[in-house]
Image (cartoon, rainbow, N blue to C red):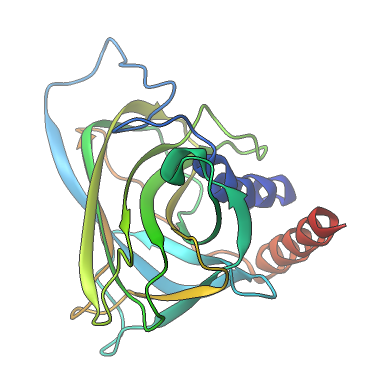
Length: 256
């Protein structure tokens, strides 16, 4: 099933929704434990790929890629996404009400071919760096969101974050790993969006994300029960174009 236009709204909104969540050491919503789970849990690795760019907004503060799947990294040299922290937010979660700017990257799966249960700690690893001068403070968050076949967000986001004074990223490309708890069954037809969000007290602070290469493999490890992992098909060109057009319209309306 291809991505619908309504899916685009949810993928875009999740970048902002995470920033407005309540402060805590870990975040997850609607994590229901099904009563008939098998005790057998397998760790499944999904690498983040450059199968195609689904959406990039005009100031490069939101980038969405197809996709995330169990295939190994593709390129000898890692594709690099340069993101600008250009979306203005008042980050109650990280910086106690200080105005800040955020920018994010997301890798989306195809609609699940069958039900999938994730039970346990999800570990997400992403290669990042920055060449910009250190801000007063900065932080990053990794997470997962679920969207149904009609484009409705199911529950909240599952995520974890960290922050620090100065730059939370180094000038050299470095692995960053965060883990967050997920106990939920994701329905057949759902789309999973894995996301990275970086926030800075400096407007247009840039950072780089590296992925889809054996030398810089950004990925997520999912504790999945014995339910088989579904196969993923390719996004259609028409669906990608529709997603990009709708995202552009949302950005335009937000600025008015």
